[in-house]
Image (cartoon, rainbow, N blue to C red; front, side, top):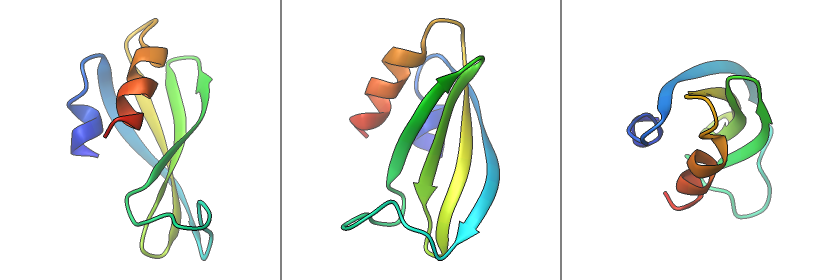
Amino acid sequence: MRKIEAIDGVVGVIIGRSYGGKSLGRGSRTGALKIQRKVPGGLKAVTQSAKGLQEIFIRTEPDTEERIAAAILEL
């Protein structure tokens, strides 16, 4: 989460609902992140935790979503 918050244009990361027993898919490791979609104000994503999936909302500055999504893929 700290690496995401450090990206220029990220205002903050909000932790959402957790889904125990679910997975991002084969080969996903704890901490793996998948951007789901762009929404007003930021990006919706899920991250793999040791116990399942964790929803997160990445609050961004206006018109920075595409650049931030690309930067997250490079983490």
